[in-house]
Length: 509
Image (cartoon, rainbow, N blue to C red):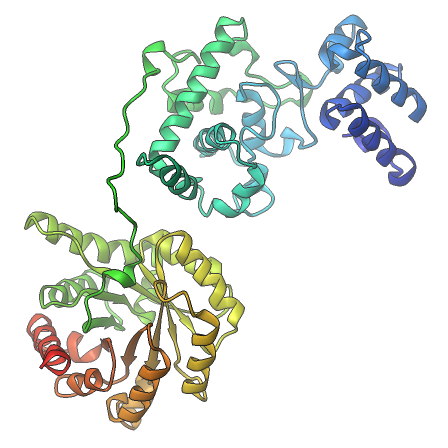
């Protein structure tokens, strides 16, 4: 704003001195840049020293500069040169090239502000995901959701830079803030509770503006930009429930929120597992209905860990398969008046972008995601950070690790204290145990792993079936990962039931 926008191009000699002067005077650099740019075009400012003098006069309260860009432009008879919305200078993001920021400027209750909805985050920075800046479709909803979320950030006095880490989807979730507020106040807040509150804050601000004479006619950009916002504005008003751009006062109501009871806590999925337990691995190439049917039958048989296997995930995608598995079992539980207690594991075999891949699985509804132990520690930690913030878990799979016991010991030392969010899996792959033998014969390996991973849940995978699951549990496994022995069986429900009973006899006698 103080550089090319104001006609200055030399950083050290021009731009930095102006910025430093603004800091010393306590003047906002965006508004200062808007003022200097307008005066430059009006012929009042022609060089650096003249720009400095204007800023000093503004800081001293000398008119017209101290009253801002729009007031000064009007005094000069140059109102068309003031680039503003509702009297506030537009920042350096040009709304001609980004429909989201254009709508955000126009609908911001305080005027042309980029921090009421920072759509630049997804229109240019690919955070949390990329949205085409030239497209109007869907922008009204995105702007509204982000404005509501940022109203909460402002009310809670939280720096909006944190949103770059806290927003993991275009729903602009507030789960982390909800947890913090709930912990501090004892009042049960959820993501959607806070979005509802944020929307009401926006309603109140809007009503204040209307009563102050700032109406819908000011929801516009300067004509100079040539941006038609009419279609997006109509959609935006509709989403907010505003009639002709104005909320009704009866929308402003305060509801009483439920308080937490003493001792209530959020548990990691791993803390909900009653061991020993069967994890049914749905590693099959089939349609979603078939996969969900087998998952439900195994759940009826007692399996409480349902794994969306790697082949199935690759065929159908996390966003389709994981919700389908969850819904199938939830519907079954609801119709029978039972509590839903399944844990959905996404066998993503994460090895590269740990945080992003884990986020994709968790966003789709997975309770735990599989990360490869053969990968780097950083990738494991990335996935772990996503799990902890979402009250989820990761399973570190030691498949293809040359020395699984050494790697297990190494990871246990590094991850000690994270027992609530990490499980480890000794795993012999399908191609290995088909050609040789299942992992159930490596009893010494399992026993040693159990000793090393004391305090952590240990699962074992690789050719486990009836008649072998008991040996695996007797050797120290908490979870038996069973795949084809269940999904290829004639009756997955009964097979699961028999395997689980065998495991319990081995553990409890």
